[in-house]
Image 1 (cartoon, rainbow over the protein chains, first blue to last red):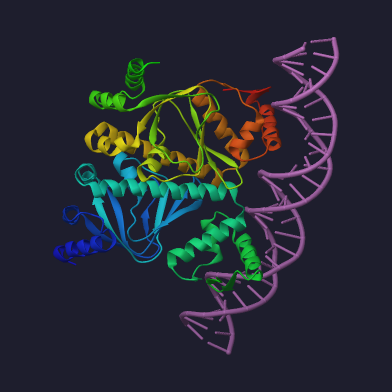
Image 2: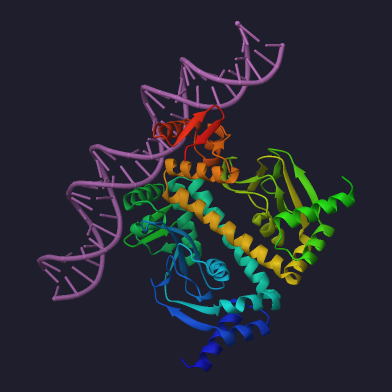
Length: 217
Length: 217
DNA sequence: GCCCGTCAGTGATATTTGTCACGTAAGGGA
DNA sequence: TCCCTTACGTGACAAATATCACTGACGGGC
């Protein structure tokens, strides 16, 4: 893709998924940003990494994980088109690193906005300023829900919550996922997840298949 | 306290704990804000409440809790002088409510800034804008630490982390607290906390007394 | 000094979750 | 078709934590 068509693509994506941005802001973003593609399962961030840009997701999906010293991962939330990574903003503005890893769940495209631009955008464009604040707010709330689920809920409730979330994100009752993957996301073990899923199936809440779970509504 | 001395007090506090604010910003804040005192254990926020102002803590300390439907509380973090409540900012800007409760741990004083002022402050004063972003950032990081501790750590590690935090916040090796209170904060039970503390005492990490725990460094 | 309420210590037991050790089943490639 | 890998099912057991029931111990107020 040459420079011209890339800029056009960025504008197109901004129009579709970030329609709240003023045209002048969209122009500025297209001018200074680049479009980047990530394959399924590709790592967008790894722990300890510094950011040079903030990411606006325009296609696909990204899962964010908190990682501990031993490399255990804990799924915190998932981003889709129209979302921005609050972490990349946070760490970008302070040039700090974070113990977060992020992976694309499918083919994903993101607009990379240089952090050098952040200050100017914040002070010049009200829609950007509102967007950043709203991003912080909603991620913060989402993180509080994560705290809720691990602080107050037992594994079966967390599993249910997880499945409902996936269903909503995919906009589909059929979730293509392995028990092992769920276990990793919930920081549990495959056996536990399998057993709980079996119980749910017996209660008629879902139907299990190989590599797939169908929610019965 | 009459209006004149209150404004003077606000300026004094801003000078001491928020010295990064431009004088013009401090003047503006003093002009439009009020000073409020909370007794020890007084509730600053309760779940479902709307905010009309954002709070800058200038004296004392505030503990924030996440609350579930059944009224269980889970301690998330503690604020002291120089901090602002990110939640009150977040909810204030969106006029949304939150399932958070906050209580003063001792006699606490806070400057209440009307949310109506937020937009103007953000766009007019760079030091305010940086302060708000830094507040979001540090609370977000703190919340991630909370997720870490409950996702990856066992009760004894969490207890150790909790005590170290209290020690730091109080700036004192002697922590005046009951086992019951710790249990509530960690969403555990008194017996478990007592047992774990006993073990720590046997390992020589601390000394237990009635209503007090002395950390041995 | 005595009483009483709060705080802390402790054993017994239940529940939840993680771990180990298998067995089985589905589907893809040689 | 026959493997062979990956996914899933399941029993047995271990570990952590919650819960119950009770005892003792301290300290303030009388």
